[in-house]
Image (cartoon, rainbow, N blue to C red; front, side, top):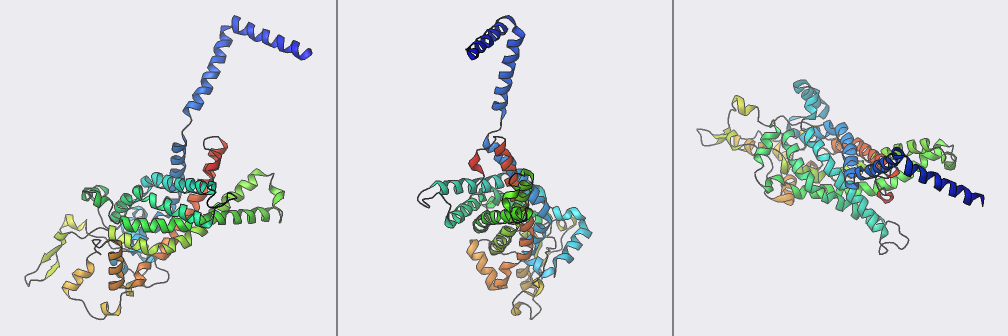
Length: 410
């Protein structure tokens, strides 16, 4: 009876306020409109994914770009012939152009980070959830290793739509003195935009197929170990400490991403070398002029053309002596003018991925396919450690704030 009387009194009070106090009514309407506006202005999941991918990818790309720059230099013929070690080469680059010379072409890389990481990370997450939900693979709803590899491989392949044009611009800027405008002016057709796409597909598919499964398993194992070590061997002791769990999870993701990136980068190096050869800046025909004896010699560049000639290509080296990695037949005698011209000519991409790979093996030896492997691993370890850790942290924050569905983080 008391409850009914209180409810009746409450209703009477509310009716009185609605009918007699227009300001109160307007206040309630304003609250309702504000709440509706907040929901209407909430970013759709695609925008949230793009923002997270951009922030995560940019942080990793900027940190590792100088190593990527030097790695691309190493994978050209002139880079292997001119420089014996990367530290020496990096020192010369900094002395000649300052520390920012190591960031040549970085803006192209950053611009491509948002769509690239959105596609790669988004497709991998979607396919992992789809495969997990499929009873065909596992009756208990688990994700088999084969499904993880397939999801990662497809994610790597799909990102090539965006990454290949940006890779062409970046590699040509890294292997020449051309500006971004000059590089873009050379890309007159779709074939030019997607030059070396076969190698890019192979590289990204192999890399992602190895990276994501390794990362998914490593982050769970490392997080469990870290949490247990923080509580003296009892993981349950820190379950109530959200800050400690969050910190342990972040460091576990950072370490797991770094550990997973190392082998993935190594096994994808041959395809990356072929891609660089197919996409590198080409020597212009004006640079080669006929001599009076009928043989072709290198023309003396003018002041304007000398600024565009191919810069000395450089790279770090920790284990291989790239200067003497040519077959003995190419090192035994002083080459003639015609052979020097052939040696200085970039590898032709007309034969496609297999043709360029075969040409490298036949003329320079199979070890050249792993040129820059150390630089690629050193670059990928911090880049993907930071990228994957930041991506998971930002995704978790977005889920907690209702900006993404719970199943997004897998």
